[in-house]
Amino acid sequence: MNHLPLIIKREYLTKVKNKSFVIMTFLSPLIMIGLILLVSYLFQLNSNKVRTISILDESGLVKDFFKDSEKTKYHLLDNVTLDNAKKISSDSEYYGLLHVGEFSNLDSLSQNISFYSEDSPSLTLMFDLESKMEKELTNIKMNRLGIDLNKIENSKISININQESFSGEKTSKIDGYTKIFFGVATGYLLFMFIIIYGNMIMRSVIEEKTSRIIEVIISSVKPVQLMLGKIIGTSLAGITQFTIWIIVGGVLMIVLPLVLGIDMSQMQSPQQQLVEQAITSSNTDLEIQNIFLAIKSLPLINLVLAFILFFISGYLLYSSLYAAIGAAVDNETDTQQFILPIIMPLIIAVYVGGFTVVEDPHGTVSTIFSFIPFTSPVVMLMRIPFGVPIWQQVLSLIILIATFTFTVWLAAKIYRVGILMYGKKPSYKELIKWIKY
Image (cartoon, rainbow, N blue to C red; front, side):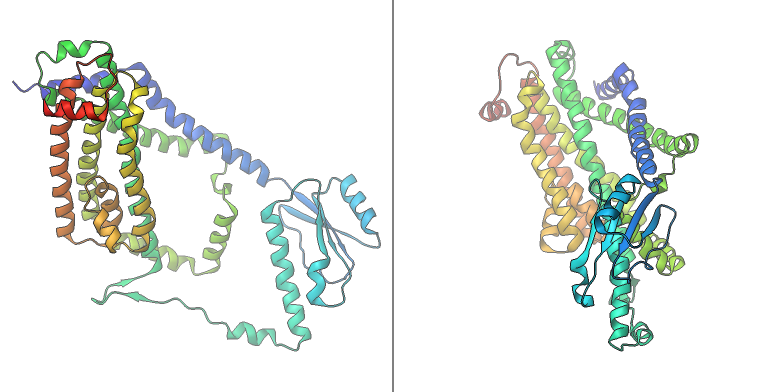
């Protein structure tokens, strides 16, 4: 009699009815969104802080470069010494003092510019001050050399190379960024899912083994059915939890910032601000249009089908190994010697996908690793957005499924013997003996 559906149902219900599972399912997104909002709130507090900078310009050149902004105010100091300027800035609790000394020529001016502050100044602020002075002083120097700035500005040429395949299909840099995003996102999602729920399967097997419940179950169920039931049941529970995380997290990300009055758009790094300025300075409408065209040009049907097939096959492959490890040991401490050989291919796959595939998706390294069953789920998912021939996807999937079938058979042999073994720390030599039984 096939007990597999009953085992899947039992495993699923046991997981989803567990108090800790229910609590963490709803508490995890709350904690995560709470941390994001806390960081955003602290960033917003820091961003709303108005900084006043005093300027002592002994050269008479730079004092007009700086105009007050929403978050930065400038206070000019005249006819005071540097020591007095420091004292005035400190007593007035200004953010800092920008001192520009006298100079003999413009080339030596940079050696006479200093910034004084109580604490280490903001890197973004320093970059902003330097950029403004570099631009204005460069213009002054070119004027003194008799260079026409208008001619230089008019002589600049912007290059945006058109990309097109030999078959006539037009692409752009945005296409490449979009493909990288989709590929890396799917690969990392599979990686995280295997790590989180593979460990859950392993702990579940260890718990049942140590509680001796398994001795009752194993008397009426084949080890292969029991192992597959635990894998599939736990996987379904994981998918349920993951879906709730996405829904609850999405709702919280929309509702909580509105309720708490937190502006998430202000949480930007200096690099993100520079990118945003670059996009704003260009034709934004054209960029947005290119993004939509890039998404539309993706092989979406192929991506969805491949994601489902490779995701399920890759997860089941690694889950069977996690279940075998759980059956072989008595506690989680003993699992460490067996976990590393499982984690290493996943880590290699992520690094190959994150670096090699992004640079050369159809190269030798990327292609080879997309056929190796222990790395193909991640690497192939990262390659597919760049256009992988169907025959390569099918061949990789066949190899992956065949390896999974063999791995399940192998893991079942270990599971059959190890599930009833107590008080003995197994070695690799011992596991080989179990497989031969």
